[in-house]
Image 1: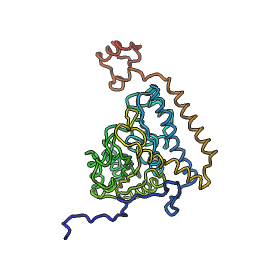
Image 2: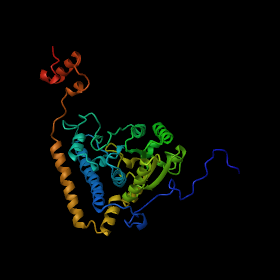
Image 3: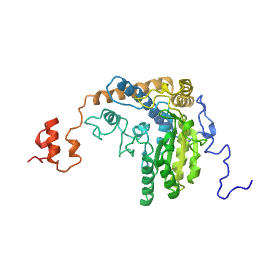
Image 4: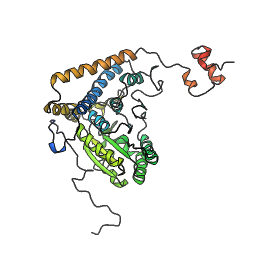
Length: 380
């Protein structure tokens, strides 16, 4: 049958949008021809970043269960995708995160105490308690404050990338999303605009196969998420999201392509959300946890640790020392931030008005009397 005008030829089975690129097998053994060239110190830094996410999540989720913080969302099982992508970026590149990339901000320089302060929403929190926990932002580390509204960050990521190109800045933007975000209008808007403008943006889709309780099987009829890039006129590639070296390789190539003017890429990191969506969720109510256990066995930390050991870069004693060091840092951050008081109440209005209106001044005085000088001398 003759192909209709404009009809796209079927992709071959080994197309990067359909096949899954992998460096490390489930057993931690690498395909030697695919191992990216990364300095030993950087490899160990990547492992440290992944382990920091794991230990930090364990400690902070425990605090939530004890009632000491109000909310928490883990990245357990997705550490390879988070750190692999972050490690592939340049220092001047930006991350526009989705829901589980806070570890990337820490990897890029966000102090652990600053992150913990944001979890508590205390007086040391740069956002003054106005964001949901796990929503840090850091201009210094080029990490935009995330939004829980699904996919709304993607047009922003494309806009930032387009602006960088117009200004002539050597900047690539990593726009993060989950599988559920590909069903939102903002994903279409962002991908379409990125394709038309050839903006230097890389979309990283962490396909963890669950959008809260909605499985990926009813999320889309497409065989992969990466194949969606074809419709928008740019590259797509799928990789093993539990393989930090595979994620690094694919994101690095996409960043280099964007930086030299080759346009966007949609990188799908196939992984699994082995924990709950958040501390407010009970996944046993809607999924077969036997499948979850299968994915736990594909632990990205265990795979990377095995490979590092085979390279002579990390042994059991070194692993134990690293765990103890990170655990101590997390505990110290919690100890120093947990008892810090809340942001000043007056900041609710002082950050909005140069001169506080009389009616808001009266309301503040009713709920918590404050010294007059705290309100900027606006009392009559």
